[in-house]
Image (cartoon, rainbow, N blue to C red; front, side, top):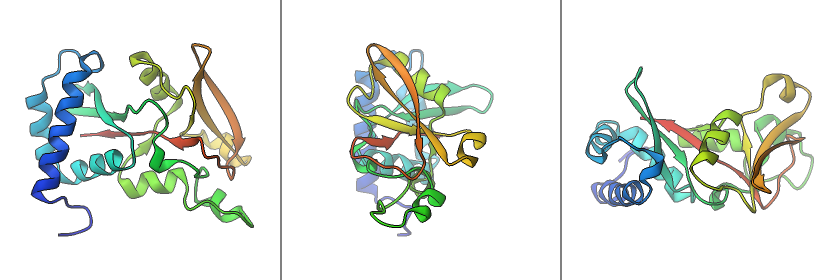
Length: 186
């Protein structure tokens, strides 16, 4: 088995978990059928591995849409709070390398790339919030525009006071309550 392969037992367990979540949260994917999504996942084992990584780090990935142009299903981390296994990370490799001491173990951009996913954009984050209240106690790094990143900053979002807020921080900062949410198209 290579690094990005799941055993038959892992695949089956993950598919059962995803099906239960799919059926429990129909408001996130009205009009979509689990059998079709499952077939797409079974035909894309490397992407199923990425979803396994999302699940394993506490993301609780679920289908939130279907791109009709590309015939891809959109999975996003739907955990109530920023995934536990992805917190206490700075924004990207450049930020990680710029820290002289007290470096975090990793960065959001690097972790996402290793997992085969991408960070949510601000727009995608706001769309996620239409399905419920997420990040009421935590926050999540989001894809930062190059103009902000060039100046040393990065942006993150959370939900407080029934409102989605976008903030900024130095990209090298990291906090126990800040992680990141990912997106994957299958």
